[in-house]
Image (tube, rainbow, N blue to C red; front, top):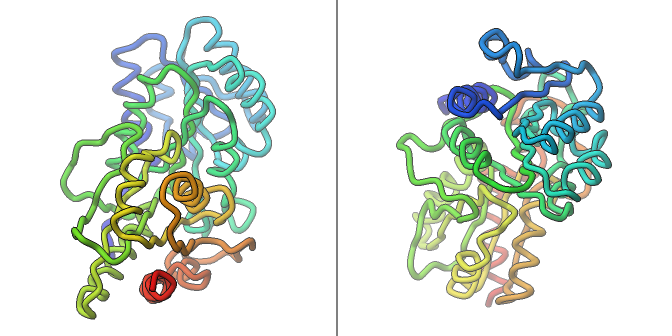
Length: 317
């Protein structure tokens, strides 16, 4: 069993360090203080933490007002309630004027919905956020990467959407590495490789690593890239690996429409078209259940990743 840490707690710890240094940082919750384990933060900064209740649209407009007045607000609630219920407010009052608002969306993907069920499994959030002009989109792999993503997001000029997990998220990076905003992280490079895998999210990076270990025993050479920043996408690094490998697989806990798979497909079509297989939710909603079992059930298991590598190699010829 992988070691688990909370990406929610990691995000709040990063925000705490930011608030200590910058009095402009403020928090806006939508009945989500408990969701983010942020009670101590609210006690520490009672004049800079605001809970507007179950009113996500109001939370976004409050944050927009703060940002237009010189503050640097962070809105924290469930991923889908931000990107769907408050999409118009994010678009019109934050993205359009390019205000420096950070959005933290919890329960991204089907792996995050085992307690609350299908209404809290958010598989569309990355695609929605990617379509908004001026919006940066980050999908950290684990608690360490979430902490770094929040710190880096505070340095950006415009709005940022950060997808985080359920609070029981597997640790992938046992040793800290240099997190670079907008840069793909090369987890494993086998030069030359037969196929390159692009993945996002801790559950799936673990599975990709296990799949590559199996594939290595069969003589396949596969590189693995962690795409923590979907927008701006590191098109140079992605293009380099696509050209060299000549075939690719994407793996994401998200619908394959609009998320990582779409981002890589767009980059490939513009730079170096290659055979590509996208693993994720195949235009379907998922049932609720335990995270690992759900990922297996919907085609994101280790055998599925191995099969995808072999199939895309056949297309490559």
